Image (cartoon, rainbow, N blue to C red; front, side, top):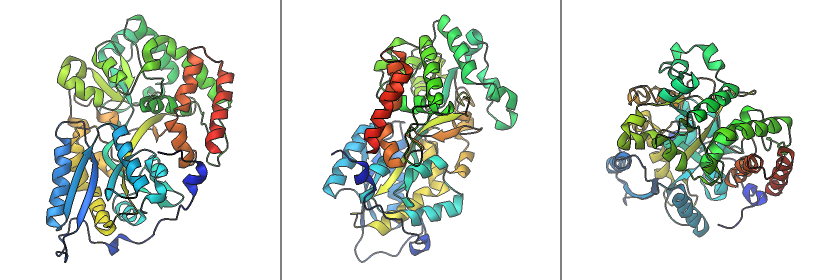
Length: 452
């Protein structure tokens, strides 16, 4: 795809329609047959969880059959790169599917050819309450809902800790701090789980031969744990007004922290991809990573002894709060679609609790909804082993769901995220290539190019 400048991003962004959903048929209600049976072409994410794709297909085909709509499904991926390739091709050509699953900032990349979904959002939020702030930041740009937040494929990056190793080597019981019932949390214990405490624990587990690990490279997993860590120190690259704010005492403090933390991490992390930390924990060598339950899911099939020791829980608290990275998936409706009304009816249907319940169940706890009422799904309490090990995968405490690049305007945040500027800055410092002040200046120059 050709380089998209900020000027190109913001050109012709219209404020979304405020039409009420009542102009469309109620979701799930069987319609009278059209004079001609409408076709609806949908590009879905091909879920990596066995059986989840079959449930997606069944839910959508059932809706099509009841509503006299010919729903044609294509499943792409599970690689996000494959999805972006297809979306980019359709964006350039101005033809393709009606509905397309998009990731994180894709709503910003393609917004001038995405149909406003404000009417669909009004319906959903009117029934289930507001989407979380991170979903709103990614999907709603300058008043236009370019995309609709979707649970399918959406995930976050909590700590995933070996219960046994951290108890034995670090003297920390993560099950006690983050029990599988938020009502049983001791606020003092949770508050005391800080990045300083985490650092001391990492020293101890390294001495025992089982290090914490996470990519510090050009991959989304690096963005999704390094950027939130910097935010927890109060470091943000660009503010809401477009001012470059990376050169700060908070960034300096975060870089100094990373210098020390990486002393207790494997040296290979600078060449890791999105799957590397999964392999690290599954192998039995690692004691902790930050990741969705994908590592647990593979371990449950191949290393049940490891899976039984994995506890998903809140990230450490920094001087300015507790942040957790998220990779939200979204629905996009192309403006060149010939079936917009029908497509919106399907989106309303997929957003209903009955359908979200089925999709979340099929994903075995991996997929995260962005609507609070959906947190009540029992899968995160029941799935195991260990039972309750995914309970805190949902946001139960004071963590802030966030994406790297926030709080910059999404057209800027998208480029910060896709250029991996924060992980690369951290790598320059922790490998000794630059001093912290030199790295901040480097990052500021890169940000200036992004903004201009």
